[in-house]
Each structure stands twice: as structure tokens, then as C-alpha cells.
Length: 401
Image 1 (cartoon, one colour):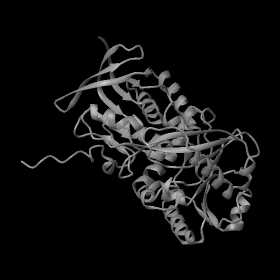
Image 2 (cartoon, rainbow, N blue to C red):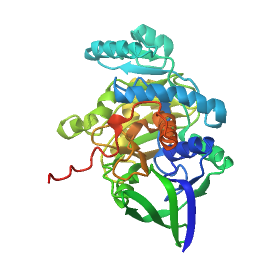
Image 3 (cartoon, rainbow, N blue to C red):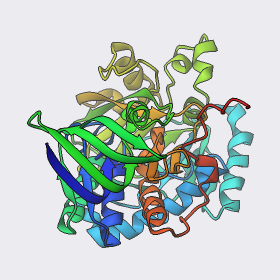
Image 4 (cartoon, rainbow, N blue to C red):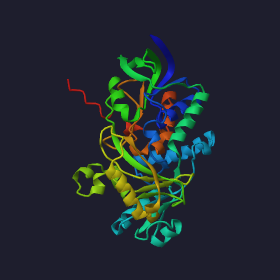
């Protein structure tokens, strides 16, 4: 059996795995990166690229997002912003109902308290910023510091930089079994792209397999309750730019943070977890979204999702009714029941680090996650306190003796 020996083994080559490989290689670590498929062929290749703080609520998620937004600027400087189309687009959170006005004003105050420049604008101010928006909307929160990237290009840029620093990459390589002995991973048996068995030995193992993290964790004896949650988007042909900022509806927060509401509601939009988003790419195309549904591993775009995204999008941006839709796609987001990522070193398996379960925040939180993993490997303090993101928090309590 062929053997691979390395200092750090990473499982998963989406935005999390690519970012971790880059940050670890930058710190001089010897890294091998494994993925069961190909780079950006999963969630990181099937999502929008909003790097956002305004879509977070105060607390753990917002602290991570604030730190990560600054680190995205570092990555843009180091790798070249043009390589993954990083740009400070700004964000506009739309107020769709009059009864949302007070709630959004309170949200703006909280964002400003966290140092995130946010302005409440009424209908007239909103239309001055984005003339293509419907005058039926009641206003918006203008957050000029928000950014956007093209996710699959970011993955490729990070992998290219990581490989240039010596990272060894292995595609279509599937872990079959973990030998866990004495509270540590001693070795991993892998099936490589040719169907051959390979023995992997490393000092530390980083588990960041996205929607496959539950299965990967189980092999290592970890309880990582990651559930796939489908999000659907449409892509228009190139044409007139319909927005300068990334547009997102206030109800997006509800769809994102309260999935249980879908099971109880009679509203078809709530049942499919709908929240309007629109991103204009640097090439003049538009990504229109967005749904959030639990449908297992089904990545097919539903007819209902397609119709809803287009019809509801045209209500907010009427010119969308006349655009040509080139394609539709769906991605599976790694959802965790308590809506917090699994991030940190395991106490149960001493040489395992987990970076998974970021759901729809994976693009935003990739840099801070990668920097945190690199810090943990170095025995240094991560950029934010990770206590409440412990990957062991779902482990069953030991029975009292």
C-alpha cells in the first residue's frame, strides 16, 4: 500500500479547505489537501459571492464576519483582487414592508455600534442609489463597506497560491477509514483517483468537507451534525447593469435564521425559505436568488424555485422581467442545527481540527476560518474566540458512573 506522510492533512477543497491550505502553507507548514471530487465542484462553485456583515445578527456570527471582511482585503492584496473579482460593491438591505421599518432601524443602530457604517434611507434615497428598484419598496439600509467576490475563482486563486508554496493536492480521493487510537488519529486509509488504497499519516488533520462533514466526522469518531440545505439561483445574460450594490431583502434574515418557520407557515415563500438577493457581476450578468430548503442531497433546480425567484425578483427590480435567463443552478449549503459553524480543535480527538457548517456564510467567513485554523496549528490565539463554535458541542454526554 502506498503511503503519504505530511505534517497537516486537509479534507475538503472548497473555499474552506483552499483557504486553510493557503494560510498553513504561508506559515511554512507541510500540507497535503484531499477532496473527494474536484476543486469548487461543490458548494463553493454554486453560490453567490456576498462578503457581508449586514446579513448577520449581533453576536458570534457578526464578530466572525467583521474580522473576516478585513481579512478578505488581505487576501485581495496578497493574491490580486482581479484574480477573484474582489470589489467593495456595497450592500443595500431592502425594506419591503412598512412594519419592517422599526426593526431595520434597530438593526442599523446595532451595525453602527459594531463600527459598520450603515445608513437608513427612505424610498427617495433608495431610488437615488438604485434607480431600477421598485418604488413600492419602503427604503433600505445602505452599507457601503460590503464586498463581493466570485467564489469559484477565489478557490482556484487560493489553491494556485497554496500549490506554489508546496501544498500537495489529491483530487478524487476518498477517505475510507480512520484509525483512532489513544484519542488521536493514527492513520487514514484513502482510495485515490485510480481506485488504489493509500495510507495517510499526518500530525494534524483538518476536517472541512462541507456537506459531507457528518460522514467524515463519523469516520473519525466525531459527531458533526451538518445537514445539506439547498439554495437556488438564476443567472442572466450580460446586459444593462441593474444595480451597483449587492441587493438583499430584509426577509432574507428571517429565511436564513429561522428555518423552522418553513415547516409551520402557510406562506409558500416562507416554506421555500425565500429571500431576495441580486448581485451584478463585473461582467454585467446578474445572480438572482434565493431559496433555502432541506431536500437531502438533491441539487436539481425546482420549477417552483425557478418561477418564484424570477417573479419575486421582478417585483423588487422590475427590469428583471425583460432579462434573458441563461441558466439556473443550485448549491447545497452545510447547515448546523444551532446555526453556528463547527470551528476549532477537538478535545475528543486531539489532533483533529474542524472547520465546517458555515451554511450560507462560507464565502464571508473563509478567511477568518483559515486564519483561525493556522493559529490553532501554531498553538497561537485565533483571531476570534472560538469557544462557542466547539466541534465537540454535539457529542453525547458520557453516562454518569
